[in-house]
Image (cartoon, rainbow, N blue to C red; front, side):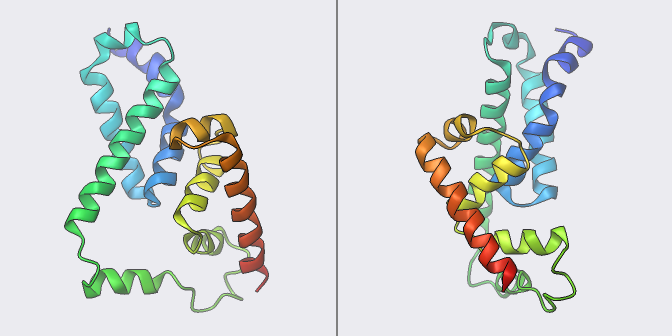
Length: 163
């Protein structure tokens, strides 16, 4: 497979890969790194891509696995009692919610307050533009669970936003 074939096969999924990575990692810089790692990994196995029946699903699976590896590395290397980690968690609270209420940054901070399962589902829906079936497959949960998590996440965000 040459460079142009690879680009035409993989690059149409770039935005979705990034959305999945942001949803799983919660960090745009980490997501960019994960997407680049995914592209490198796919390039290394580019000859095997001819045999893949669902290239979009395969690309999303590789992206997910790379993100999970990154999360594992972060958890292993991070010490929760580290004052730097605690300070970054405390920084997530907004100092002036009135001034920042209508900004995307404020909503992202509110999303950080959601339980992890709700946050992942909501981010996959909002950033990766995946439907419920795709989210369920990506996270290994049922379609009904996806629907419930989305509903709860949206309800909680509305409450937090209006406070």
